[in-house]
Image 1 (tube, rainbow, N blue to C red):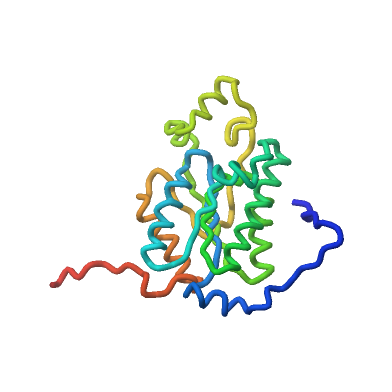
Image 2: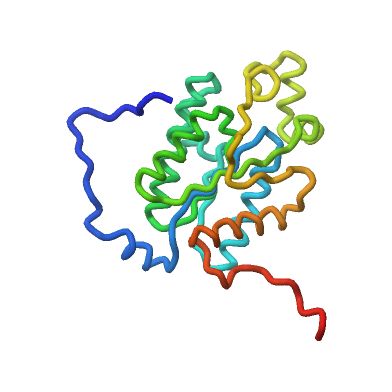
Length: 217
């Protein structure tokens, strides 16, 4: 991915308040959880459960759903390779701002190209913010059987072009922080697995870890 543009005659203004002080207001630490996978893989379903789980734990979080962002912020973008690249660049930048503010940004987006996901990670790591890439690895056959938006059917019928996994590539991660076997792992278990990674990163407190029930009592 090319270096993102910067408007002329601008300078970066520091917040003037230490990140730790801002995070203390929310009582937590910021991070981004980036869920990638094919359309219909279950990313949004896992994101909803993860957001519920984090909220129950008292962790400030917000979902930056890819479709929702295309209703406003990215509503001017189509689905060409260039527009998809720009879409992911913008999402990555917004997620970084949310994480810097002290929230856990939960980002379910197809993000089909490895370069775009790598850039999102880089902009977080450049400012020492945790970035967790989660690959929802669901076979395309399962995604097509679900076809919740009817997109695969349209693509197979020639009514839609540029469909990821059909006539546009999906570059699967080869070093994701967590791989979820979509279609086989229960949603609650998937969310717990992500929480476990966040505990390991110091984003979620150890007390959030679920333990097996006492079977001796």
